[in-house]
Length: 186
Image (cartoon, rainbow, N blue to C red):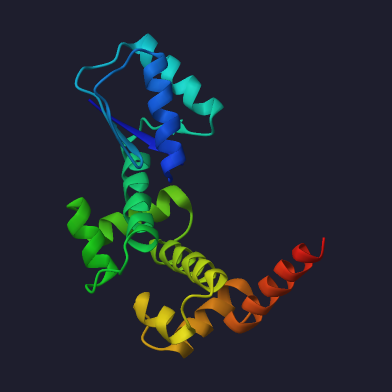
């Protein structure tokens, strides 16, 4: 039996889900981001109890097919941008379609219908979050970040970053440095 869980995006979430499953004596479960595979079917009572316990932790057990597919899309994008050392060299649309086994147009339409934003916007938002993270760590310069995240140029990265955040990447980096300096002064 496969269970799909919304907002499950980190190792900490996976550990929380493991703990909730153990409380219900559910063993041999395979827990991955957004997905739990259990060898046996759950009774309605156990499923409802799991649903309630997950909600207390900020996680949501999904039931309808479009929400489940949208979570799968979100997990593929999150994994692709935040957990790979390098992004796939193929188009994001091709990668997502290949991973999920659906036509990209269908995936994009379903995602927009459920989330209220386009899949492309969601990808951009995640890329900007990754850029912020990389700027904060100060290990890569903008050229290296641009290459790592498959931008056509530093200018393209900078324009997209400013459009989403309102700041240039260098100004954002300065703001974070000032904030860190202020924290050190405390």
